[in-house]
Image (cartoon, rainbow, N blue to C red; front, side, top):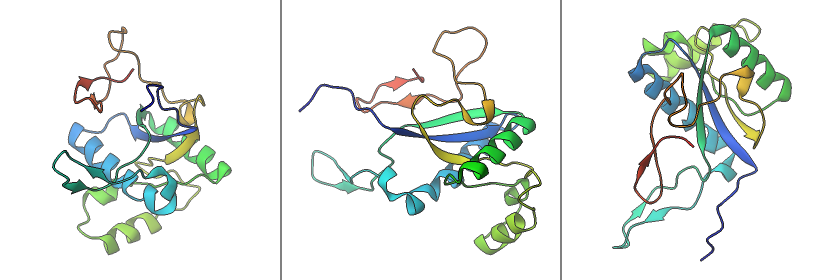
Length: 164
């Protein structure tokens, strides 16, 4: 078994509007990343198996980075994603009030592409080392002044770390 750290040529980025409540951030992130593996299957790893041989579903094989930004940052990121034809998902504010997939599709369909969605959250694969989507602030290292990370991250060793 190699001790070299795994490197990925892409990462998955989720850009959230900064004024969302914590429960909304979790909900939106879950919805947005749910479609990526269906369109970009190479982002999905192998199924997991515990020590007793009980299998679990496969997950993303690479990091998911969560960013936050203003509505203007989201608008700029949305335009950039469209111009690069990157895989994306969007979530509008109306989706918090719908209760099924049909109504979700109608809510998104009601917003023209050129008009910024009220809660546009691009999800994209981006080359490692590229700037954050739409100029969104990068997450800072633990202990860095100014901001705390959006959420802790669990490592494969089971420790609870914040982003590096």
